[in-house]
Image (cartoon, rainbow, N blue to C red):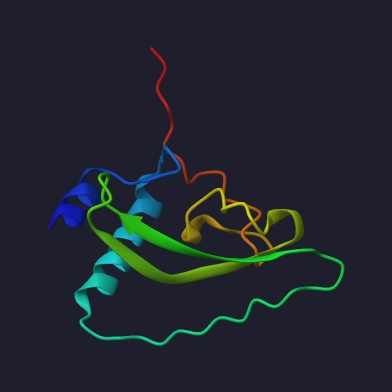
Amino acid sequence: MALSYEMSTGIEFLGDKISKSYSETITTDTERTYAYNIEVDYSVQCTEQAGQAGVGLWQWVTSTHDGQASVLSLHTVCRYGALYDKSPECPWNACEGDSADCSQCASDWKTQQVSI
């Protein structure tokens, strides 16, 4: 319940408010994920690439503000080289471009900040 309520009041990613269209997709995905009462074996291949030291597997997680409730998403990304130990800078549904490592993000995923 707490997670549903917090998602309805707005979603943030690394301190940035997520715009409505991206937020709606994340909310739907999260609700579908925690509505299931099943165990899932999910395998991902992240193998080291020649010439790039380091490989990291990142998984998106939706959590309440206080961290008391979390849902592990099936959305993951492998990051290599200089990015292997750095989290993606946007939600999974805002990753774009030809890069499979989420190194490019859509420009409209954040809400506009209003300055007074």
